[in-house]
Length: 446
Image (cartoon, rainbow, N blue to C red; front, side, top):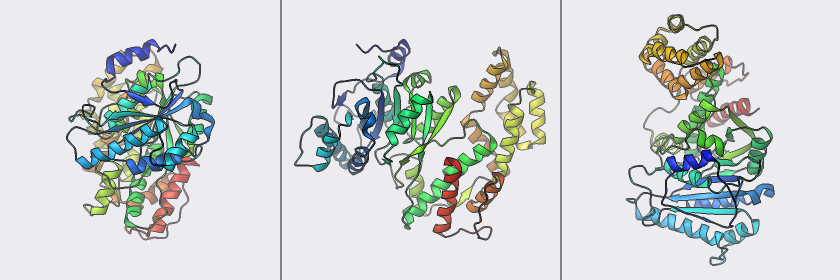
């Protein structure tokens, strides 16, 4: 008998959605479930399966790879047909059917990896049009996974997010499972790298976008932010109890990863698993209104100058603000706000607009210990407020600057010794851009 804990029962009763079912290749319970939403990804699912069967097989028996094939009701027929092919492929693997001597099906079956599929695509099973999107698809998969975990032993039950257009390194599964269990962590982001070995325009686009992502991450590290981690939907994980404690995945059509990780970070330390790699696709895509696919598409269409980054000055002010704000000896909200004028008058105005004094008085009133006050401060000035402040400073005082000028300045701030051999205001060759990106990766991952 696989008894669900009271907290998981409560979560499922209050937050989970119904109307779908899971088809799995073996009737058992698992300790690790990798949830993979997919829409019109037949060829990419084949590529991903080819990558998955090459993994270290140590944890195959205790792991399920759960695909959520989804679309809304009103959508193009070719998307529905692609999804139908994906469901058929996965069902052929689950039921060990040799589909016209498909060598992939044979290879996956022989590998003994456990495959599951949730059909959220066929007639009467589609996602509701108003809320259909990647957030809802992830949520359905993650919520159903809670009912498939083995709760009879002390091993952590781990929810892992991946995307259908990714591939992964061979130690992907083993590294995640070992890190969660040996280090007793609750939540993590996993190392990611887009492939940049080509020299075409798509590669230029993804280099530019990954630099943008890495820059913000590094700048938050410099500032000492509690939210200094990448927010990549295909590279995040948490254990089951932590998932229900933060009330699960949201239904957002985009940025679901940002808000989910922010919720986790407000309650746990989000660790970074650095010894394995997720390789997301760097492609143009219609699937989300913003994020990788949208940014690559925008780059390729030349809609705007993509070689711009937040001014490093903004992160200098953020660092000074966080030192002041989190100083345990600074307890008076009026005094703290007054001192922000010495950092930046724009910071002062921003905090006034955020009703800083009222919120801080509320935190102090409802906290019994210094630790509670500190934790509530972290929750109040969260990842979203941090980004709002950076945008506010950009709009009011410190405009975006040339991407590589910004990188040179941030590298100095972080004591990274890097010689670019380029003039200020210029965009270097793609080879030099790759060197910038690799330097950023090396700093983060060591």
